[in-house]
Image (tube, rainbow, N blue to C red):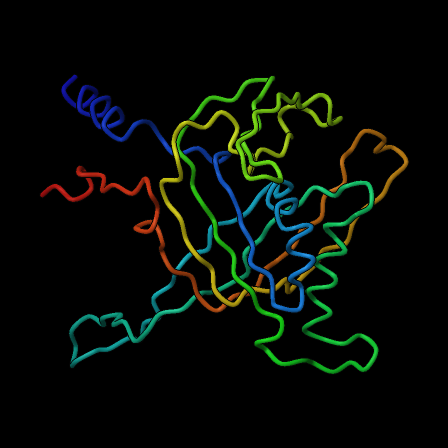
Length: 237
């Protein structure tokens, strides 16, 4: 019983658990795509249906002295694999066109020549938001063109998207708590754009596109958040 009480107390102290659906993604485009970022940057954030938080690996090398068991000693570190993401596509497939334009900065499909690295890399920020409840009628907290707060009521059904599939990332819907964890991914670019499958039997299916992002590294920027606080139990002896 003591263990259960300790678990409940720990959960209460941590204000619940992190939810996989509570996240936000922001992009900083390469300089050549400044206008596209201005017009579609927020839309990409809103339409990001899923994103993978990148990991971090330690590289090791075996060392053995005499007949004693070998040790795996750290020789460095790395960031392996792509960041996988999925985006909802609007009626004009603008999201897909943005990714195609971004890839075109890296390689010219007419001359088949690669361009300078610094010309096609950008940054990405991924936020883990605080726990909050979502309802069918959700308040979209954003800013209008004059910078003042808005509170437009929207309904997921109005978008023709099942409630369970409604793209909530970036909307900050009724979220009273701010971001609790954040990373900045450096030197990112869309390395892979997956094929899109069409079918007559998929009448009510919303199109999505899978995008794999290459990157150099990522940094924890949680300490820069206005809501930053250390979770004491993680540092107790």
